[in-house]
Length: 143
Length: 138
Image 1 (cartoon, chains in turn green, blue):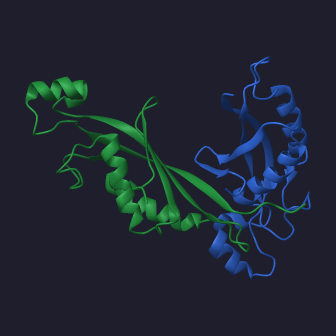
Image 2: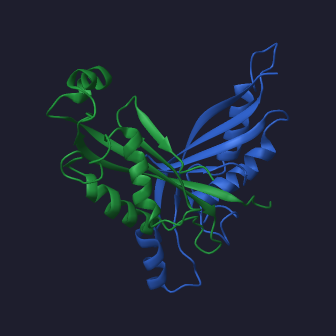
Image 3: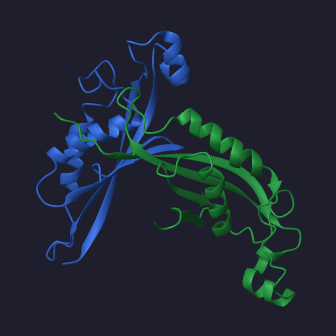
């Protein structure tokens, strides 16, 4: 039987625990409360985040892999997990000084961090899972 | 006619080893790490099979799940509780990575399914943190 070929997508889940506060200095306290509700509480709150990184490509005929999993683990752990794990995203990192660390902004920021090390045509999708019920997906800028 | 996607999950348990026989052991260990250990290791794989097609106006179904179950279980019987490197012919020239396994299963399941809705996707979970998606090469 001829095995089909083409692109295969590999997804790997990473985890980090972080705190944040959803609050914009451009909004009044009342507006922050109205827009962000309890996510605006002054001392913040936290999540066990999960980050699912999807890479894609043709399968190497020798290794049987579409991406070096060891290399992917190193890249994601060094550039994202160690950067954010057990940190306060508003206070301990500089990534969200200009915008609110919502799931939407975090997933785009993480894309930027990973795209520096993963070739553009290989990084296909990110999914940031904030809670059991909330997740955010990003597939890069449209071509 | 309205179209919908239907996904059914299946589990199977298998062992495998990542190594190339023509490489020295140090090279296999360097590339594949502990996945190259000589006696292999195993996983409880979870396979999600997605079919897409029109919804039959009489039955309200894209495809009868009984037929999907029969087809996929027949294919997976050849993989369940097997050693992927040693107990079958598919991985004599290729390593039974999750990628290669997904592509092999696509070919077998696509041939075994009844006529009608097309196989749209396979998602093969090796563990709770790693899975592969294959859309037939699309």
